[in-house]
Length: 455
Image 1: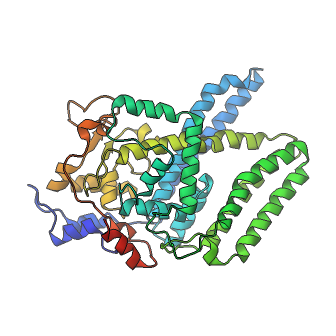
Image 2: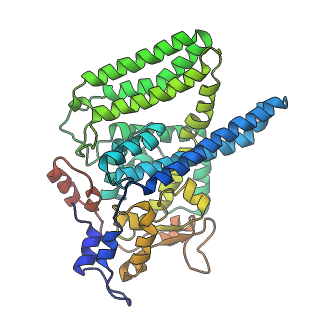
């Protein structure tokens, strides 16, 4: 599993030749180099956008209040802020994606901690949970049963029966703007991430799946904020602080005493223990909830909590899942399981890249071919692979968003690539990407190998 399949092909000369000659395998492998510096800037940029958005919202509401105007006049601005926050949360998802592949930073512990504390914990997940979900997607991409992305979208009724016409796509997208549909998508995805699903090839079915650690985490993450808000308004700051602190202490004590084997298990070995990750996640939320409570304590109002609810929690259930769903549709919808045809390359603008295709997800085909290449080198990888005759012939480049194929380049648009004209026709062999496990230690490798052979 430590050999990257495509790189091996290139180095062994098995790759197709083009008019430019054989590809440089060593050059491709060199793109895998990681460091402990580059992604600090990418993380800082996302958090700067988040901070500026929060600041702009507060400033705008202060202006309305100072002028004696109703805050409802700020509704269009709020909608824009919620869209930007959802896009930024999707950016954090992109950072977790890099962390999942051990690409955020070269140091494994730094990679895991930064991915968790600066990206995963703020959007109520963990890198490990996403890794179990996402690497199965890589290894069994577009498998209708074993690819968790597809089974989760079907479970939440958000998958499309590809190919689909333009009007069907727009109708389905409009349907997703109905808030209960977005909430259902988020809840189903949270269940898949927290507990997995029975067809996930990495699920350790021999281990008893104790659901109480997850329930304890849900209590502190979801129920405690409502209780604390009630106590601030109807009781006192002392009651609010007492409940928050007591709940944190109780959950932490439970996690300390719980055997490691009782945390949700999989065949992927964690970089940081399940116990330490769960306790870190609760500590992050305790600090966050504590700061919000500190601001509101003694005021009899919940201004800070309200801002958090409107411009962080609400996007988590609305704009964030909408952008995520759009990405999943365009990346893998109407595609088969072939090595070069299971996803695409998107020639997208900056807004599309920020909101829908973050952290190199516009170059998704080269990512699926070599998941060990950092996001900031995927364009270079694509340019190199375009020298390969098979890649150049089969890779689908998507350009533009609406309408039919681009008449100048012949490239499909985001809408047309999902339609009948671009439905898979040739029967391509299913591609099983076991190389995506390159940086991961696995338990029971034989069982995972058996899963791969079933394809």
